[in-house]
Image (cartoon, rainbow, N blue to C red; front, top):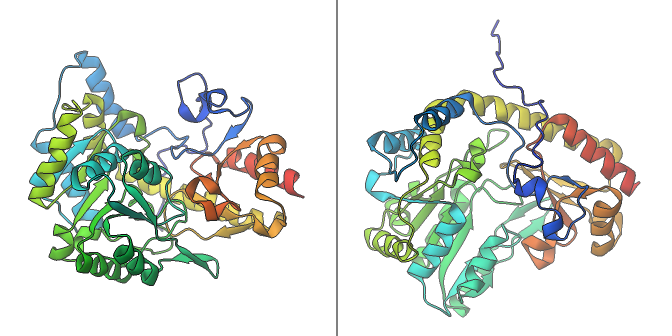
Length: 394
């Protein structure tokens, strides 16, 4: 009989208030009431892996926080993780390290497109995608995902039409998709890749949620599909979502195309950004070397949270429909069955339920009847949130 040993208490409720937490301490600054229970921004309410904490303690105890860069062991740790988990081994020379994926996306847009160029995204999608495009004076082109039979799929005909009509130069792919939770199949990605290669569209694949999949779903690194796709894509990754390290500002961007890599590196250099955060370097290396047992437990816990929400909605709020996630720890719920206006739904969530969620319209104007909820929290917190929803909508 196999015995499962749990090394981490994900049920522990840790008070994050008064820690400069964006999630907990900045409601007033973001025009929200101060007494809300927050399940919005995508960080977790769990303490990270002990193996990571041990390495960070070593850095602190050393007491010197000078300029830092990753040595060969850093690259081996990152490459080993992707090789073991995704059967894809990025070459050392492909690495461009940045303080975050959003920073990288903005730098890539500036480096590889010109003002006025069309950049395509697939809404509803992670809302910084749109602002990165428009704030850098590129044209936002939306290839809306199709919501059908309770799930989402890509509209490839519309994509091809938009690419041709809008003279699209770049496509920002979200894989796995935030917020709709799709883990794109290899065949779906292949069709997109072929279309983009046909029309000379550069693909930037944000794969920050790659370590979270459910029910046998398999994440495919876009660049791993073919050499042609590899040369026509940039893969953006980070340990931040997987190991709750967002505040340590570390991401690994893989750019196989040498010409693109030089352009992106030069664009980053022009911002004045150079050496990485020493704590981020230590945490990333430790995460990929020592964090796997913790992650396996976390994924089981998250599956339990997802199962709880699904059952709760079916039993207590049947008019709210969970869009079954294949990946991420963010769930996407359809509130349209309530027969209420978008404004009324948002008002009840804030004023009656006292919850801070991400409203659907943030991700695209067609998604106002949806809400995104972060389930990476202790079960009791999730139970409280669901109970508040029930009281507010029954």
